[in-house]
Image (cartoon, rainbow, N blue to C red; front, side, top):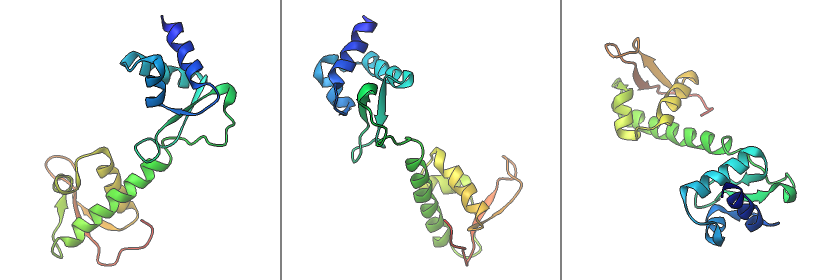
Length: 156
């Protein structure tokens, strides 16, 4: 049964790049197992996934024998950087809106900006690039406090 699904996916792809939705709708069947087979074929190098993912640029899958290599994009390069820049700009906006001399904990910033993986990374990026001031020792009893510097260097 597994080999049949794998063969069907490769046959459905043919020589054209197709989205996951198109592949699953073309007779493979929309199931967790079919999606797992699709990802395993990618890991084995039998098909390639291009695009960034999402509505504006969905992932497209191409059979390895028809893949020319020019459209391959590493999925982790572009979106993470853009996401961190967006979060960093939101954090800067929150800290600028706070009264001068008022510092906020990471917990307070997360409550406003959003609690996700990128928030902490963006805060550290802003601190390393000297866009925000960080005081405190860190940890539960003495959390870091972040404040806005009146003159922020360009770079983030």
